[in-house]
Structures are given as structure tokens and as C-alpha cells.
Figure (cartoon, one colour):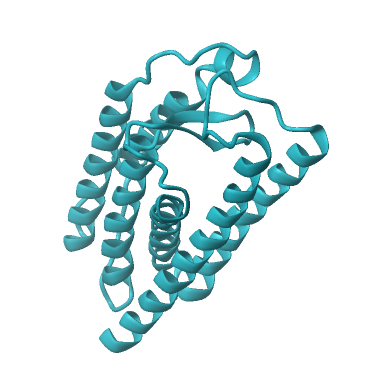
Length: 218
């Protein structure tokens, strides 16, 4: 069982690293076309046809990572664990490849356009990297426990905390629509909301982990 889990985790990680290279390559080409100096505000708009392609590419990226988790996992929580690992490794390797190719980001405090759906997300690189690290750690823990006979049992408290954390992170990325949609300079990033949201994830994980160790407990 341990060997099987190790091989599946290795395959997921290798796919995510390679996929990060593919994503970084696309960004290298986009920046050469539209922002050779790197991400700068006010943001330069993409042509509508290219924007539509980017939106489809980002949606396809999520489908591919979710499909990878589904194929690697054995049950719903096991699949979630592998999905979280694949997403986190993909995101971390994406920035590592960009650093190798472009020398960017020069600092984790450099700002980036993170995602485009349903509105553009922006923030310092430190924010998505922090989320990705948490995803890899928690995803690996969940996948390891549920690959055998172990259980992962989030209750109502875990769900409330996880959804609160997710909402907080999304708000921190998408709230500044003046900068993303109307050509304004960005407002200071809400680090406090990021750290609070990650703390919610940590609490949700701790509760679900403990419930898994004691199935009879509520």
C-alpha cells in the first residue's frame, strides 16, 4: 500500500511540475507580446479574441488538475488530497519556472495577475505561493491517510471554517475591481485577510483530522 501510494504521489507531482512548465511557457509568450517589462499597473488590456482563449485555457487547467486528482485517488477524500497536491505543486512550479526563464518574480512581493475567472485576480506572489504551500501540505496529509484504512471526517465546523477561509482568500484577490477592470492603480493587498483565511484552513484541517482519529466523536 505504501509503495502504491508513493508511486501515485510521485506521478501526480511529476505531472504538476511538467504542467507548471507548460503554463509558464504560455506566460513567457504573453509577456513578450503584451508586457515585456513584466506585470505593470495600470494593466494593459488583452485583445478580446486572446482574452477569450485565456479564459478557456484557465478553465481547462482546472479541469485537468481535477481530473488528475480523480484518476490518482481511490475515494472522494483521497481524490481531494491528490487534487490539492497537484494544484499546489503546479502553482509553485509555475513560479519557479518563470523565475528560471524570466528572472521573475524578483521578490515574493512582486504583483501578478493570478487568474481571470470570473473577474481578474491580482495580488503579490507571496499570496498564491502561501496558499499553494498549504494545499500541498494538507493535500499530502489527506491523501496519505485515506490511501489505506485511515479516515478523514470533516464535520460542520470544518466546512464552515474551510468555506470562510476560501471566501476570504477570494475576496483578497478579487476585491480591487478598480485596478483590474477600470485601469486604476491597485490598492494595498489585504495580508491580514490572507493570514486569517489560512488560519481558518488550519483550524478546519485540525478538526477534521481529529474526527478521523476518533470516528465515534461528533
